[in-house]
Image: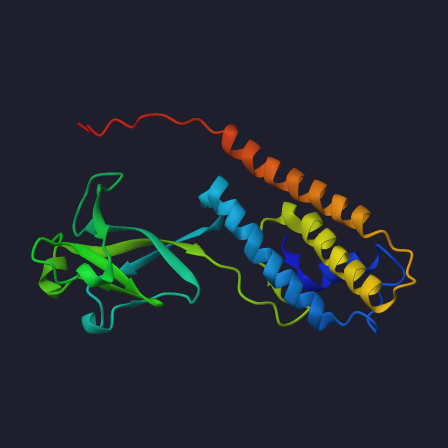
Length: 223
């Protein structure tokens, strides 16, 4: 199941009869939902980065080493590991590739197997023969929700965030209604409190999910 933008907006309209499409167009609702999704995304990444990361494996050698590895737009590289070619051990021992700052790419003491990000491209340190012993690189990136432009667009958040998204759009409608109709009897504070509770419950669920895991110190020795 995924969160569909149109379903969120429809549910927000159900919160009050005044939240009709004529006075509160979908365009504004999509914009505020996009902004809120990005805000929640940032909070999630601080609690449990695993929920907002994507791991991609890219085969080596690259077709054109000089152009680098294209990344999906709006992604931030978090970790890069290379895998040795013809390695038979299971699981394979990865080689940690150092992610360095672009401006330090030519430093004489820079790590031999290093990489850096420029915009939506990841570059491996030249020359290409440095990477001849590897058959692939595994790139972990953090996703960033794209702007929502259509009611059928998917909100890039866990399913349990749907209620918080609904309440955020409902608060947006409530604020607009009071601004456009000063005689409205809508109580904005109630909508704000409902949003606060929904968001707190969602973030608590994320934190509880992390708390349920077992963490241990891994033994690096593998006979």
